Image (tube, rainbow, N blue to C red):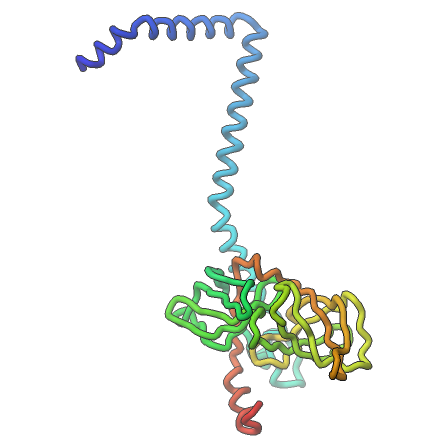
Amino acid sequence: MRDLFRFIQRYHFFFLFLLFETVAISLTASYQYYHQAFFIHSANIVSAKVYDTFDRVTSYLSLQKVNRQLLDDNTRLLNKQRKNFVITDTDVFIAHDSIYYRKFSYLHAQVINNSVNRRDNYITLNKGSIHGVAPDMGVIAGNGVMGIVRNVSSHYSVAMSLLHSDMLLSVRIHKNDHIGSLQWEGTNYREAHMTYIPPHVELAVGDTIVTSGYSVVFPENILIGTIKDWEIRRGETFYTATIDLALDLNKISYAYIVKNLMQEEQKDLELSVAPDM
């Protein structure tokens, strides 16, 4: 307390100056319209900037909650799509009837690690076995295929990216239903190649490529990309088309894990007939 009094005594002229300056400014602003308007205008500008900054900070902090809500909503919508169900009785055609049996279900996840600059790329997700994730489940985003789950721990899973030398995806040309195989050749991460297209098939730049539905991993009609160019390579008799991938795998933050509820039944049946399928 003694030190405080000493400090005030030592700088009392400075404090008196501040007091008189404050009184003078207040009197000027109170009795002169121009100055009053100036101070009010300045105060409004400062207040507006403060409120705007506060609003921006609040909006930013709420983005995580908004993103989670959007993921939940998208997951519910994906799970309700007709293509996730198979019909077990062709005599009845009611969407919510018991004859429709769910084939695919979806779980949203966050991407916590990813690469696009290697020959064999992988994607790490924050969902694992305790969430129901298992190997051979598909991974998609809102506008394309991301990969296939390969390894799972309790809380995490690692998917083989579409940008992997071992990734071979069954796809089709949307306009004419011709089937082919999609594979990344290890160069441009925004492009892949569709092979085994018969030479009689009419192709055009911009033709849409989607999943064929022949895989036990992915539903049909998931967007892959569009045709950019095509050729018959030396020594081959089929077209190879360059595909512009719809999904930028270098800009992914969230994903949907696809579970085929009939996968094991289909695989076991096919293996019982042809072990090399």
